[in-house]
View (tube, rainbow, N blue to C red):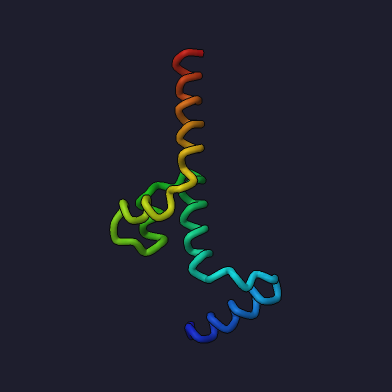
Length: 82
């Protein structure tokens, strides 16, 4: 794939959608965050995002996890305590 072609195509798509503020890199970040929130393993996200360390992937993309963690704790408490 020609990087210039990808870049030109991206600019056309985002302009037609009225999303001139959206960068191609933002899609990468969103994908990694959605994967984590959907339950993908940190290693899967690390590899998909091209990070070399799990910590970097988690520190960069895990901002959506506190709500998921609270829900998991609540579910565990229901199983333990009824």
